Image (cartoon, rainbow, N blue to C red; front, side, top):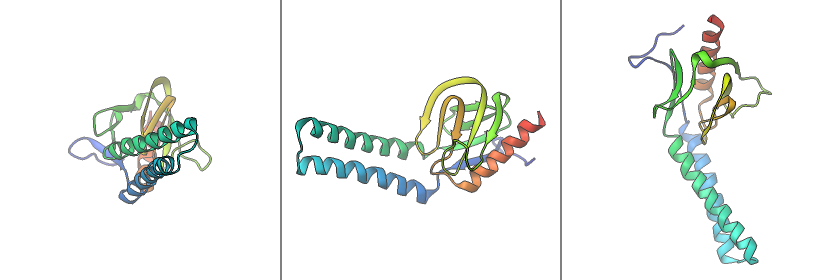
Length: 159
C-alpha cells in the first residue's frame, strides 16, 4: 500500500483538462445550434417548443458538467469522497470493483458495487450513484482512475 498525503488522501481522480474542455464545447455547441436553428427557421409550434427546451437543456447540462468537473474525487482510508465533502461510498460498504472492458461503467473509469442502496446522485463527467452502484469516470484521467480502482480492490481484498 501507498502512503497518504498530509490530508489522508491516498489517490485522486480529476477531470482531464482537454477532455473537460471538449465535452463542455460539444454540449454548448449542441445547445446553441439547436436554439439558433429553432429561432432562425421556426418549425411548427410544438416542435419549436421542443427544440428550445432541448437546446436549453443542453446548455444547462454543459454548465452543470463544467461546475462538477472542477471538483476532485479522493480516496481516503475510510471513504471515497469528492473535494466538496460529499461521500460517494464508505470503504466498508464496497463489495467489488468492476473495471473490465464489458463492465457497465463510465468512460475511463470503474464501477463500485455496494452492500446497500444509496440515494441517487450525479456529477456529470465525474461520477454517478444509482442504487447499489457508484460509477467513477467520464472526462477523467484513465491512469488516475485505474490507480484508484486498484487501490480500492487491494483494500477490499485485505478485509
